[in-house]
Length: 203
Image (cartoon, rainbow, N blue to C red; front, side, top):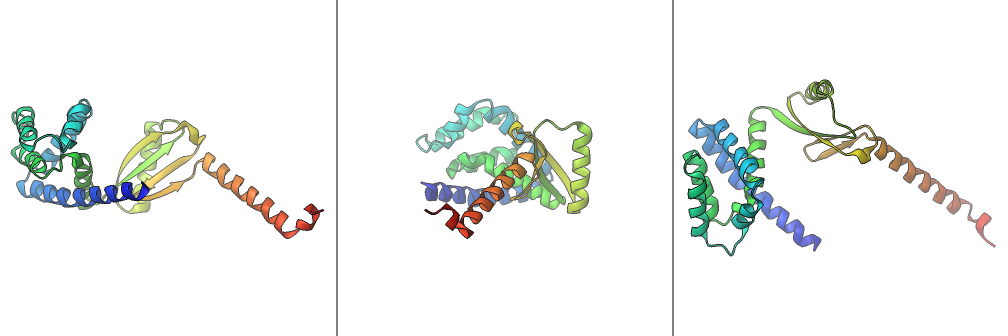
């Protein structure tokens, strides 16, 4: 089961990389890169997030391609840029609408790379104030040598501290994480003591 899920993830990553690059290059060539990204973000937040049934339908291989294309045309033709509309139709033709979120995320990564912007995530036990967010953003920018796009989350189970995600790397400075490491170290120490002087515990 784990191997199958991993395979699906790898397929999604490849699809997102291929289609994300194609869409990003086309958006840059059109001169409407930012407008295209804004429409794609709006499609995610204003349409798919509010209509999960529509997203399920888009990803359903049992729904005919032509039905999906007609639906796309009826929903988006009045407002979408020609490039966005054409891209959605292409995804429908190639049974790739189910990867739309991943593709949009990939386009954002490519935009950040082109603009020397790194996206980092910060998870804290309580919401950060605007001042602390700004301080964290500025500190990360100095360390990374690039502009920073900061996304924040709250996890009360952390007790305190902050967990930073930069790319695929997690830097965990939470109190909960330090307590867990200490617990493991203490447990390991007890085991070592028993192993090195086990005669005390033998009959």
